[in-house]
Image 1 (tube, helix red, strand yellow):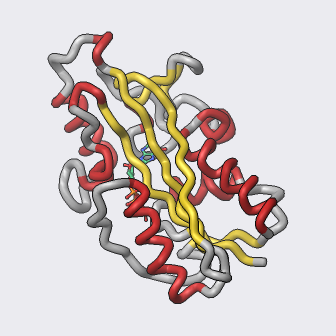
Image 2 (tube, rainbow, N blue to C red):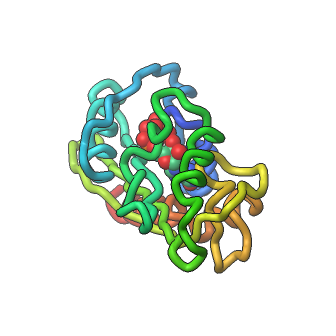
Length: 196
Ligand code: ITT
């Protein structure tokens, strides 16, 4: 049985393939299948956007299709950038431009008010059309400077008290153990093991 990960983000693909290792399915990314589609994310929630991505790709995939919509909710910014995390510094901006903008926005925010969480919502559609979403979250604090060179996106500025490190300073396996995506995709694993 085949499972398609409907994302164009290479950082996500790496993490998801690691989490799904050992699942009795062949796991492919869009790039593995030569599919080049960018679904417009115009929903107001992670749930809406992830299901929209999964639905568009499912139409052409003909196999179990999963999509991840994720982002960073910063309490001092009322939950922003949230669903706009990928476009926070404009379309096509680099990861560095995005987290630099965030650090600037938070420059006057004291240490105890820099709390934030990563959210990942996975949408899954089974070949018979059954669909569901699963949500994982991970709490942390926004640093004052980027730290570390691993991971992707906002990882260098996301400090996890439980690890005493940013997500850029830990291995892929360590991040997956406690991350939003790790939680959501482990729920997906359990769901698929029951359904299939
Ligand atoms: P796809 O839609 O193709 O999956 P995307 O990068 O556009 O790729 P999203 O719309 O879900 O994905 O945007 C999520 C953004 O939130 C992502 O681009 C990162 O900037 C950030 N993000 C999500 N998960 C992250 C993580 O684990 N570490 C760091 N940043 C993350």
